Image 1: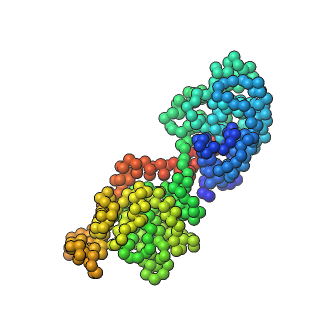
Image 2: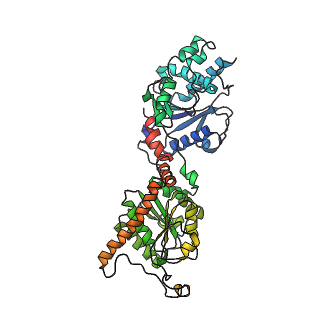
Image 3: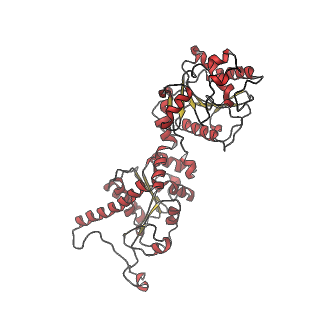
Amino acid sequence: MTETSKSQSEKPQIAIFTNFFSYDPCYSLIRVTEDQIKMLNRHDYPVTVIVSDSFEPKGEFKNCKLEKVPNVPCHNEVKKDPTFDEDVENIRKRLNEILKDKRVCITQDIAYKPSELKYQVALRKLLVNQDVFAGLTCLHWINSATPPVTLNNLMGMFQDEYLNLFKKPIPNSYYVFFNEISRDVIARNFNVSKDKVRTVHHPTDLDELYGVTDKNLKNFINKREVYKADAICIYPIRLDRGKQVQFVIKTMAKVKEFDMDVRCIIVDFHSTGGDKVTYRDELKQMGLDWGLTPKELAFTSEFCEDWKLGIPHNAVLALFRMSNIFIMPSVSESYSLITQEAALTKNIIVLNQDFPPFRDIFGKNAIFRKYSSNWDVLAGYNEAIREGSNTHTEYGPANISKPERKKFEALYHKETAAILVDKLNNDPAIAMQRRIRKERNLDTVFRTELEPLLYL
């Protein structure tokens, strides 16, 4: 459940009006409606979905109140069939019962498609009664490029009772499309002013996309507002000092300095005692010293009791799918499955240049930066990995003071951050993924685009 700007008492009753006869997840309008149900439920808006009598609830439709209207024959062309009048009146009567206490009615293609003509006429007849329905706002989702039914389409087929309904736009209505550039066209098609056409982009349920099924992970993502971040880095490790978590933290702190919203998530497991606890405390303080807030730097073992010893592997994979940066500064690894998983989930990869096996295992297509290692890069192979061998990288020239050394180290990590930020901004695939994740998730689309329409 997500916070919203309106108190429960202020929230209007919402209806979603469809003519769905059955549940077909391949049908895009089913998915559009399910996302609307999810958004309204996440923000505690009472929602009723109107479907046809034969509809059996599945998927997200199990999580809302269903009201049903009669099944009626529908046609893909403008047609007045023998039961038209009776069908319209039966639908109108049910709509009257369902909508009399609603403040907003979202419709799915009802406003324009020939196959929805009976439903549209029933709604128009209902809204003529402004004594009862003056307070009902209709938001008509226009989900395809099908031209709307117009007065001209009805001429010669329908009597004046129906023709008069179509001489004006549907009362109390706004028309919703999915890109700003098309608003003029939609306004012209429906014979309304441009201010009656609003833009709501289609959202994506990122939990579903990334495979977030663990309830603790859902809570973690919401509490940390992970989907809002520009740069997300995860590092799943046991808190041994050889993993050199400090370099991940320092680099992400420098990424933040490029006006990036960052999340650095340390997935620490089997790290509940001894020096591992001391190391975690040192890293948390380092994060603060380098400018990361507790929301920006998280250790999963501290989030909930279930995660104290570790988190499920499918949760780690879900985090990798949503992250875009992976930094591996470890002094020694036999292979590194986490690096492989990060690469396969399309993260930008930073590897320890001072540990040659990484280049052998993963090839040249990574960013290589110097973090020291237990491999002597200047020695022959037989001497490089013997006990006591190492490569020690110091940042800056020799014979400088510790404060000066720290400044050079900070510059080095800022250089790494600059490379990462350049890729985040300028790699077309990475930049688009980042933008869509931030702007087209359920909560952002709801707060910035859909929710304001509920109060027109």
